[in-house]
Structures are given as C-alpha cells and as structure tokens.
Length: 82
Image (cartoon, rainbow, N blue to C red):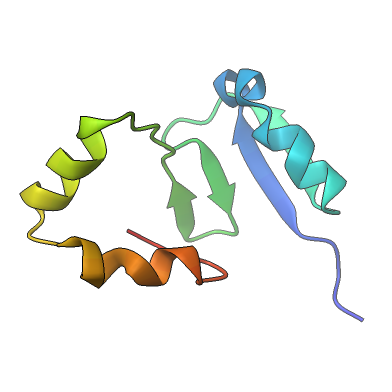
C-alpha cells in the first residue's frame, strides 16, 4: 500500500480552500511560509497556482501559441499541466 502524500503549502494558499481539499483527498498538508512556489511536492517539484478569468485564458493561450483543439486534452487529463 502506498504511503500518504505529503504536500507543503504556502500559508497564503489557505484562503483558496485547496489545502482543505487536499486533506479530504488523503494528503498530509503542512502549512508554512514557502520561499518559492505555492505548493512543494517532494524535493524537486514546486507548483505556482494562478487563477485566470475570462479573456485572460485566451490571452495566455495566444501568448504560448496554443489553440483550443490543442488544449482540449485538459478536460480529460487526470494531471493536466499547462
């Protein structure tokens, strides 16, 4: 059986509600002031969470040269990364 996933979460992320959701999913969450990133997963992975609204999504996709058909996989992916 796999062990519990431990995720270090920046204290500023507490308001997002995500740390609580991670705990509900069985993760061990530790809130602290991270020097970089919003979430630390292991020794080599940092996640910086961003929230986009409306036209910001289209602007982001345009800036990296992606079009809608190329990102449709995000709806079906278990762990999408963009």
